[in-house]
Image (cartoon, rainbow, N blue to C red; front, side):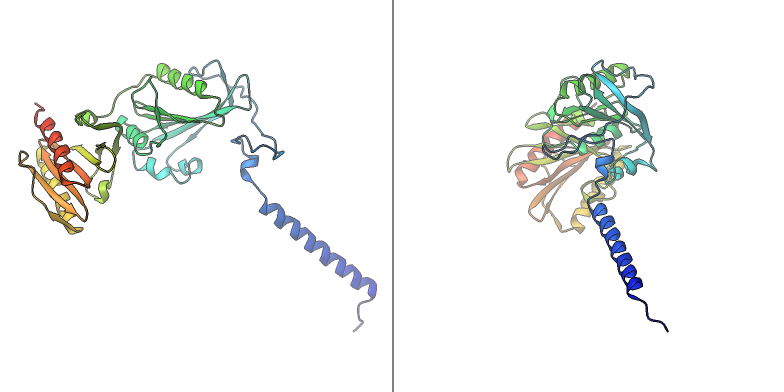
Length: 331
């Protein structure tokens, strides 16, 4: 067999080196690939990076009636259903899906005077005001600042969140300079489509003394780790190390409320709890010590209520007793 000549060998080596170079270039390009760089949802980048923002062209479709004069559309609206929601908010979709989610509509808008400053509007149709309040309250941010145009609304440095009837709305900005535009957009949305129906009345049943009003939340399922407990309003009382979470849940009838109180009590006992008495002036109450915390559970009429994870039994009894008296006064 003829051995390859020097020329053939050289060509073969050259081809192998060329292929290796191409493979190395592809690997390097993939390792540096930044999908956000090519996205329409770019935020301003760190100074000195030298990379430019890529922004979509203004949209030629009709301007929404709710849009303030200071903003212009960027692209068309998008819609997502239960099958495609995770494509938009991967990692958070389950919270909405378990709370009655119907659909999500989103759209981006830019500042008329500075097109590089933009925001995105998210309108979640939740089917029911309580569902909307649930997703609003359970993911409320610690740096929340109340806003004055709606009771269920708050702002952060670069976003605004509120409910409007069965809608839960988020306005997220890519610039901290758009706070005024976000507020104008939110007010216009509510004025254009007024659905400001408040959630069920349980939230108003928490006695006001030492109540943290901003803490009122609605938990929809598996509340306190108990699969049989759903649609429970919670709120924090007290301050510092002497805090307790109070809870109230309206059930279909007094029998259901009593059965739920008994079932939750059994759940506590099965998970390390021990009986620790009752509230003297609340005959339908039970106190449980669960490791180092205390729970008070009672039913009154159609309501199941109590106090959760209190460090001091006195605090748990005091808060639960106040709620019991308020529920007892309901005609």
